[in-house]
Image 1 (spheres, rainbow, N blue to C red):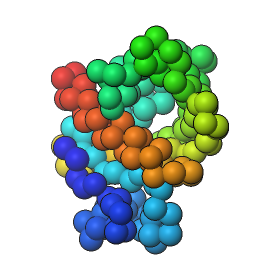
Image 2 (tube, rainbow, N blue to C red; image 1 turned 30 degrees about the vertical axis):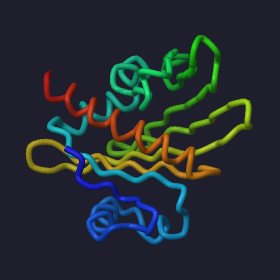
Image 3 (cartoon, one colour; image 1 turned 90 degrees about the horizontal axis):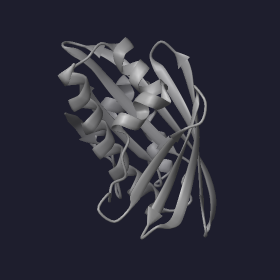
Length: 174
């Protein structure tokens, strides 16, 4: 269940600020940088199971998805135990590639370096995910920052929203 869509064009909602403060992510950062994605999501699973699903490329492949999958083919390739590559195709033409390295920071935090390469250039961003125990599972706080444009952040916002909903469904089934 998505707890809140924390970033909007006018800044952070009151609910978003509360959720961000809960994850010790200062809400003022979002006010300064409009091209960020921040979400909080309840998952009905133990922290350790969710952390594993967030940190292992072969499991990331099961829940991470492109927001416009009807138009865009999302090809996921695990590279190493800590890295993966996503190639995005439209009509069999490569549109962009995302190279990501995953690092477990501690028992409740995972960080991805996220490098997107397209014909228009290269963007290096950071995805920070933190888990907090709650009754019946955990709450995943996600912040994706460093975008050059609102188009990039909007696309990733949609991708993360759909992907985390999928992760929640997968965690509930097992």
